[in-house]
Image 1: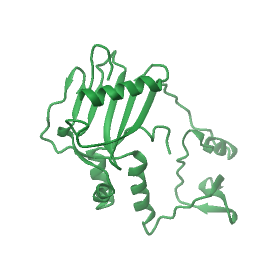
Image 2: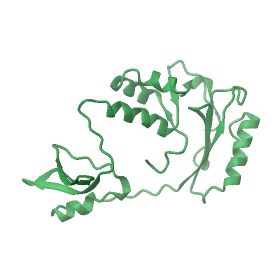
Image 3: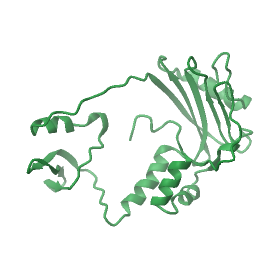
Image 4: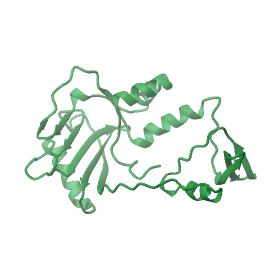
Length: 231
């Protein structure tokens, strides 16, 4: 998983169309499994000092937690006849021959072995050992570029009922350049809301402050206070 996987996500229109093209019927499967199908015009979105106007463009999205969406994708990928997903396997290094990387050296329950491949992807993130492996093979390690963004997240999951809001979802994004806070209240699978509070260039979010902001968002059915920045 990724560090922000537990926070608010939605499968937007362009991504939904691309996934549906690759895996026909997957959106219907998500909705049947409890994901709400949302129209952007049915939500309340406050940004840069005003509410977004309705759009004539078809902008439907699938509301769901990131683990929910990714589990459906993983299942579809796993079912492809030319895909094999292995678990409980450790990658020990790269297989190298004829002047290039030709696969991976792995270790599983049946002992060490080599998986040969025409192309090797490293998807292990910040903990990747690939730079060290490349150096051991005589290659220069890739240059590392670090961007500090100072974003803080806070998220809770709440039970959802039809009378909670007068809209399908609510989003608040403060006005640039001084607004540093945003809030998202999105319906997800299982009859729940996922509510996330985001701050930039700020200290760690206190749980009490986040919960107070969420209560204000639900009770008042408004999205943002431009004067105070409070939800």
